[in-house]
Image (cartoon, rainbow, N blue to C red; front, side, top):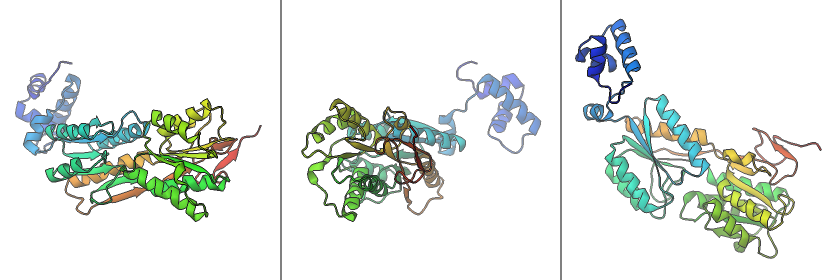
Length: 355
């Protein structure tokens, strides 16, 4: 296999003209099936890859989509990107990936790179510290879909988990276990998912006649380190909360570390609930109760909506909020083994471990 195999190389190896090879590789109808078979097999053996730049100049499409996420180190985004890549590949598309680390300058730079690479469309998880970058992207004319977040006051296509539903289910689960001092370790409220998860938390408390205690709500945690630092201060509150609902599993990992270091037991002293159900959440020493985000469906639906926009099939704006599921594990209920069907509480789809 030599680098930069060209159509001329394939033509020389098969004995056909460059024009015939080109037409076979582009699946034109006026090439016999046997000729096409020989050319495609030879191209495969030589390692021929189509020149996307040249093809793009002819068709005005590069068959690539850009993907910009907030933090590729977070397993949630990794799982979503994996599904986007697989869905795109099945449709004959490639992806270009960038991560912003929740930084609006990096976000702006990433968008500029995607435009320079001439991607045909963009999936983006916006930083949301302001909407300036998204407004400029919108004015560029490039098809795009927001991934996992949206703006309440700036209409766009988006695909995201139902954050309110998840926040409500997590909090109601803790209330039904007897907790009434439930801390919420949330992300900054300029992020739509943080606002709506908090709204679900508040509504669940109110529905059960519990007035939300503002001293138990913090809004500054996005990483494991954030969760650890914030949990240390939350655990110092007196009377101490008996349960913590974390913005994400990533944040919950830090919370659980702080709880252990304080000499407290999970769930006997402090129950902990996360959000996302990343792969590691079931593998912890104390498996984490969490809200499962539908990462596969999120990746598939976002890619579908974007490709429809690129191909001119998606004229109506699509605002999709995907159903989430409560997965009960031992961080809230001792001796419970979660199953794929555990949608709510310890009794639905869960069974107690026998000692």
